[in-house]
Amino acid sequence: MRPNYQKLTRLLGETRVLINEPLSKYSSFRLGGPADLFFKAKTTGELAQAIKQADSFSIPIFVLGGGTNLLISDKGFRGLVIKNETSGIKLIGVRGAATKVKKVFLEVDSGVGVNRLVRFALDQGLSGLEAFLGQPGTVGGAVYINAHNMWKGKFFGDCIVGAKIVTVSGDVKSVEGKYFKFGYDTSCLQKTKEIVLSVILQLETQDKEKLWQEAQKMLVYRQKTQPQGFYSSGCIFRNIEKSDALMIATPQFTCSAGFLLETIGLKGKKIGGAWFSSEHANFIVHRGGVTTSSVIELINL
Image 1: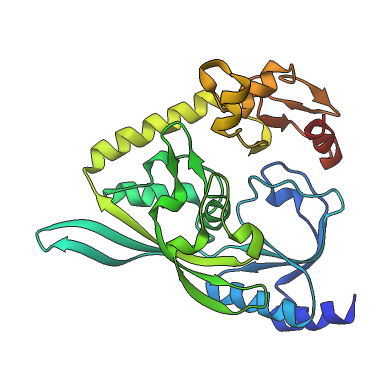
Image 2 (image 1 turned 60 degrees about the vertical axis):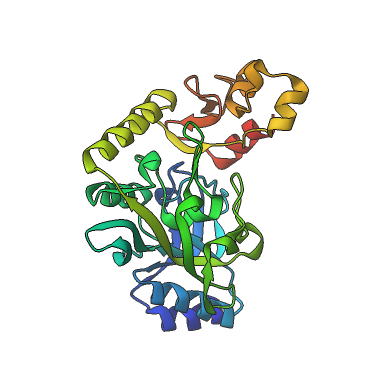
């Protein structure tokens, strides 16, 4: 083992660092080679400290959340993979008349599953996240890509009013929601490479039963329009811009990448055991025995 790997392993705890850990079992795609070093961070403090310590030894890091919207190389990762298993959700404030609270603020760790968070909010009668019921992945990943439900025009970033983030060198800072410069499938994190430790969400009180009914509609729609029972990372391509849809005159000016993939005949196209789903062409799926390189071949068609 490299000397800097040995030093980092001692700092993180020799019983907690795994060597050459296969990453495929942590990915919804079930693909990918091994990580040189693998560490599970249970608290935001551990997450920030692991990033800082790795930086001090010039060891590359990758923070892994739910393993969705992620394609891991067959070669794996040369450095430290930190599995984000932070799990805190807490009420930190309310706003409104004493007899009729309207706005509620939650502080949520970045390792919390989006679906778990949504169910928590629904059970508390809090509106703002119901469109994301059944959404895979973690809060950190949802911030990174500004997760969306285009059927309802909802973006995860719409509810974020603040956050704690850690820089690539391990320094922790607090930021406002506008810091992330959210867009469709984008946030500033994709350029800065900073990691979210926790977020502050602003939600509103509503009737719990009505919220659950609305959320269930989202879940049924998701299950009807997306492939079930296969390994997948979610949608592969971004939808096109509205201006492009107008220029090429798609039917009803749809921006759907899935529609475009189906139009050019890629729906059902198969390479090495992976294929474009027959239910939704923007999903590449497989049942096992596939390599990342086969998926990349499909993407590059």
